[in-house]
Length: 278
Ligand code: FE
Ligand code: FE
Ligand code: ZN
Image 1: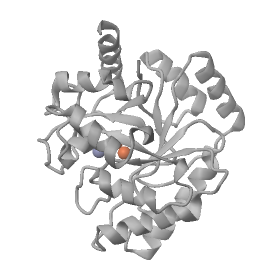
Image 2 (image 1 turned 180 degrees about the vertical axis):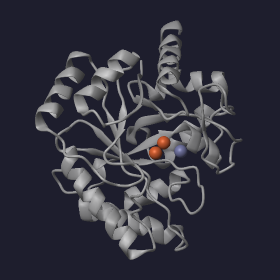
Image 3 (image 1 turned 90 degrees about the vertical axis):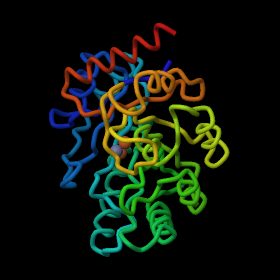
Image 4 (image 1 turned 60 degrees about the vertical axis):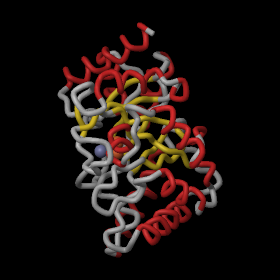
């Protein structure tokens, strides 16, 4: 069994997201800790957070996967962009304390011309400045498609970040299926091989969550254009094999496919059918 859900808007509060996901038929979800593009955040009302926690427990939800803002670039060359990113990251970690068992996933960033080595060093530095011995949130580095100067385009790059972080026991990886495919890992013809590679380089014990997306482009395209389940190059059978893979059981799977609410409801039910048919 896996947990399935999609991204939800935090506009109506936290408990409301839980209720929406119950209506959708899922048992996990993702949300942006702040406006994904603008970077602003709303205050969390403690009663609202508590109500969500009760709902999650009573309905046996899997871990939630909060997502850092797209504008947070911890390895930007521009000093004010990076300082702004560090500030968002520190504040997000503070907010995540209300949801101790949640995961917090973010894009390692784009080195913007400084080179991958420098980018990796800057991301690790940001993690070292922010994580402490009593950080309770599991921080997930997302596998990236390798668009532009993105860091995290290979398992090796993620490993290098992890190796440089003092409290690396707090770190995991979010496996984005579209990104991994676009980065050049053939999860259609060799899913076992790719996961074995992941295990060798990073360790499957660090794989905490999956972003479950089909791709509009071919393997190795470095494009990062998500597609609806079964309508892209990974395809229906490819997506289904991922859901059923033994190494990925009990993880939250988050849809980031181009859909409206009804599209997400359909995809959640498709995934539930795959689980029940096995
Ligand atoms: Fe992401
Ligand atoms: Fe993603
Ligand atoms: Zn993407």
